[in-house]
Image 1 (cartoon, rainbow over the protein chains, first blue to last red):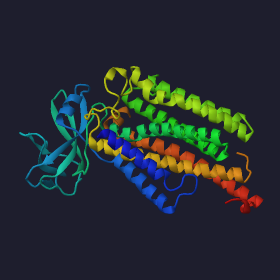
Image 2: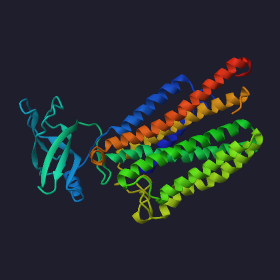
Image 3: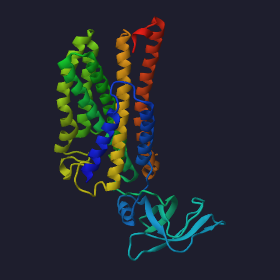
Image 4: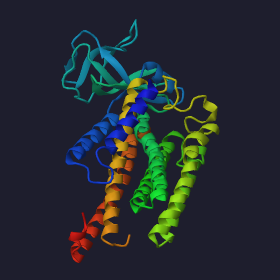
Length: 351
Length: 52
């Protein structure tokens, strides 16, 4: 099921991006739809709140004296009352999934959000747990009746949403290098310079996405693993990939003649792509390291693993949507840069 | 600052999304500048008739 959702997201992105033209200007309706689709996917990837349980909060407190978490609660059948004097809500709330629920009084002072609370509303409340006093404290109401709530993942929490952005960028770099290889093979068969233009533009985009994946991975690593760079196998392999394609650009800039440059860089692109799936998908999974999916963990990582507790269906759908959005972004950028290069060739401008 | 980010992790997600958007935006600006140079070149050399 998970595989079907992710693959269909990729196919939707591919179809949207390749249709209706590849090397010519896209129609205006396509551009409008693409902007709406990308905006919608990014918002959906960022906004849904994460709602945990009490048990997550108490477990977190094993690592810290004080821990904070957003918890899903439900208002009971009594209508909540807003106390104007102390500026706090007086409501009886319970944890929604418990059969014999503990009932809490919600007291959040200093905040007038939300304007209205009704019985049976679902709330996401930020709570703090002090380990020494074993007391729960309500800090603020994060949202009321959210349409989508994501489950809490240990060690990650809100940061699990980075999955929707960091992973598609990395997978897109593989797609970009693949397209670069396909058009390099086409060039060698037909000796048509248009194919070389597409191959080199795609390699540029692939390197940009690879660099973005590295940088976003570094920022994520700072907050999860403690430092920006750890020479983890996954980090090392993506660095080597950047070096390999850096050599591709060095090769291209060293040759003046168009056809010679196209021929040599096509050959290099084909050979370089052979290493890409190994560095991105295979090597980090056969060595042990910090990144999810490494050898000691027993799963192939949260997205490719078949275990359903790593990503539930909601998260998989949101991930798949973000993957399609990034695929559309990639094809659009490829389209623009190919058109510019073709114009440069036609008008005789030096590149 | 570490505490603030640990408690409000959504800002870490925001930073990463802004980084990705920043990288794409820089590339788009580069492309835009190249297009402007190309347009200037075409106008200066009156190459309009040669381009489809």
